[in-house]
Structures are given as C-alpha cells and as structure tokens.
Amino acid sequence: MTNPKRDIPTRKQSQANFVSDTIWTGDNLEIMRGMNSESVDLIYLDPPFNSNKDYSAPIGSEAAGAAFKDTWTLSDVDVHEHGELADRNPAAYSVIEAARQAHGKSMQSYLIFMAVRLIEMHRILKQTGSIYLHCDPTASHYLKLLMDGIFSANCHKNEIIWERTLGRSDAKRFARVHDVILYYANGDNTKWNGCWIPLTREQIQRDYRYEDEFGKFQPTSLTTQGLSGGGYYYDFHGKPGPWRFPEHSMRELEQNGKIWLSQKMNSWPRYKRYLLESKGVAARDVIADIKPASRNERTGYPTQKPLALLDRIIKASSNPDDMVFDPFCGCATTLVAADRLQRQWIGIDLSPLAIKLVNERITEDRGSLFGGVTALDAPPLRTDLGKLPNYRTHRHRLYGEQEGICIGCDTHFPFRVMDVDHILPKSRGGTDHLDNLQLLCSGCNRSKGGKTMAEWRTIQ
Picture 1 (cartoon, rainbow, N blue to C red):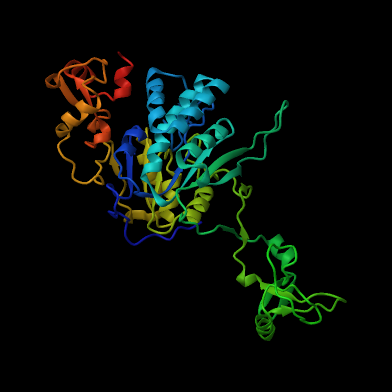
Picture 2 (picture 1 turned 90 degrees about the vertical axis):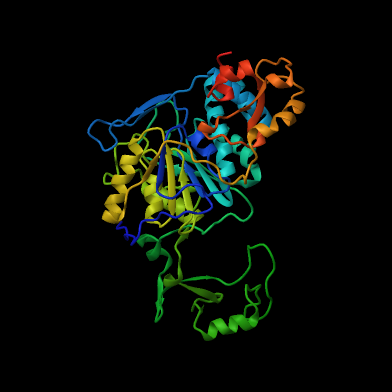
C-alpha cells in the first residue's frame, strides 16, 4: 500500500501537555502519571501477556537488541501497590485477589502491573475515546474483569478474536491460533466510524448477478418480515406487505428504476442494491482476513502486529488529527499506522530501540518531510490541575486528617517534627495536588528520599 506523504509533519500542541510525534523511553506508569487527564482519543496497547516466555529479536534484523521477559513473580513492590488498589479501585483489587486464588502469584503480580497502568489510561482517555487491549487467552478473561472494574462493564463493546495463524496443530488439544482484543468505549458518546471490509471478487460474482444501465446490483427484500417492529400495509404489484417504506416512497423508488420485478411466478418486488453504492461487508468481531505482518513489514521484533490490524482499529475509532497513544509501542506499528492515517501519535517503550524503528519506518513513508521523533525520558509535568498552592500549606490540614500520626512509622508526633511528603515524587510524575500528599515524621521522610511510597515500604 502506498502512503500519500504529508506536506508538513504533524507537531500540534493541543489540550495535552505534550506534542505529537513523541516517544518516551522508560516506565510507562511514571510517564502516564505526568500526562494531563482526558488528553488522548484512542489507546491501543499490546502489553506482555504473562506467557511465561522470553522474547528477543534475531541478530541482523532491524529490531536486533529488542528483548523482554514475560515472566512474572510477586515482589514486595507489587504487594504494596495491590494494597493501594484497595482504596483506589476496590473492584480491581477484588479481581486480582480472585486471580491469586485461582491461578497463583504470577497472575496476581501481572494483574497488579496492568491494573495501576490501566487506571492511568482511563484517566488520560477522553470521554469520547476508546481503548483496545491486545492479549491472548492466557490472561484475557482476567483482563476483561479488570477492565470491567476500571472502565465499567457497560463500556465493554467487543471481545474481538483475531485469527493470527492457520498452520498450527497440537496433539493434546485444539490448535491455538487466535489473539483477543478487548475493546472498551469511555462513555456514551464514544467515536465510532464503522468498519467495512471491501467485497471480494467471489462475493461480487455471487451476490451481484444482475446488471442494468446503472451497473451491477443485487435484489434485496423490501418487506419487514423477520425484522422487529412493524411495517406499512398496502397493495403493491399485488402484494400486501408489510413494506419497509410508505406507499409514496415505494412509488418514487419505482419511478427512479430502483424496484426489481422478477418474471418468476408469485415473486415479490425487490430493491436494487447497486454495487457502486456498497460500502462492503461490515467488519465482525472475528477477524480472519488479516494475516500476520508480511515479509515487507517485518522488523524482527518478536511480537510485531500487522499494519492492517492497526489500520482497521484506528479508522473505526478515531478521526484525522486525533491523538493515538501506544504505551507499549515496541516496533512502533501503531504509530506508523496512525501517521499514515493523518492522526497525531505518541508512544512509550522501555527500549530506546523504539525511537530508531519509528524514525526509520516513518521516514520511509514521508521522506525528508519527517523531522524525526521527539525523544524524551522524563515524564511530562501536568498542567490540567490549575494553579496549586505551595504543597507545604497543607501541613495543618494533613495533621488533622492523620490525627498527628506519621504514615510511615504509625507513631504520633508533635506538629513541628512532621514534614509534607509526596506519595509519588514529582520526579516520577507526581504533583502537588492534595491527593498526592501525606505527612511523615522527619526520620521517615529522610529515609524515604526520592522513592515512591510503595518502593520505600519494601525496605522497611
């Protein structure tokens, strides 16, 4: 597919506190915590699946050096983050606890990792936005419950099945050939453009067997039989209905040559649906027409997804100039697809290799018009909280709320030895908002230093 090159690279500043064409290197949790709320239109993520495998790109490939472990063990940090979830999102906490009992500590650790990140994605996603989580059956059922708890079950739109391969067999079970994509809307007014798959030559030959001076057409029913609701009853070419349209509309269709009358005995008038008017076939929640990344697309990245899959998702749930975000951008397929469709885009990955790959792939599309990505490693600073007072002004309020007890050592201290502390340090994406503040005694505050509260608790 040839990509029409843009005249000017997209670098728009919007309500977001970042610009398009940006990739951060580092932990996506800390970076997302620094993003403004409701600043992204579409999120696609293809995170680790808890597959208990190690992945690496082959030497000599474009992605050589890319590697990650998809093996999870419960650490003290995980335990403390799980405890914090009990207050932030009790539903997510309960799902994780159930997974621990049903599956074990590895799944518990993986879901804690995903939960704290999905909470941030929910915050930064616009009310009209959508999120697509790509996973496989290893954890898809747990992730579905987790997303129900974070986004709400009412926001679930589809469990999409992508048949990623045909050539696989297993002597002891049905062949595993599919991935799962969980699609959630973020509100009642979420963008949806529809999704249509072009007709194949076989479908055209089968369905559009008739032709007149206006082109090929297929005769389709004009009655409401078999449909919910009523219809219009009147005599039309000897048939009583129920018809889909009132009589004057049917007469108008006939005058315009849109009614087909078969010569067969007792046949009913039918509507001429022309091939030129067809959008194609409405895409279904089972995707079997998109194959794995082609040889021309492959970078060697171990879990690379095909451009056609991201093209379908982005077209369905966003418009030109919308902001598309991939927090596990890897070989940058999401960003390349978004760029081709004239969307703004940002991504995060642990490896700086993502910057190299997106520069190479988009430069191949845009040529010298692409000035390269904005590469960052520090989280953005939130600008959507308004002008906040100096965080130390909250000392008296916090002292009263905590009843003079240090959050760190659970000991009562006089006011003069208590310090205001950031639960999540500002260097890690935290803010001066009251929700991110607590009182520690001077000793605990010195001990904690620049660590997050969850990290510091692991060494106490």
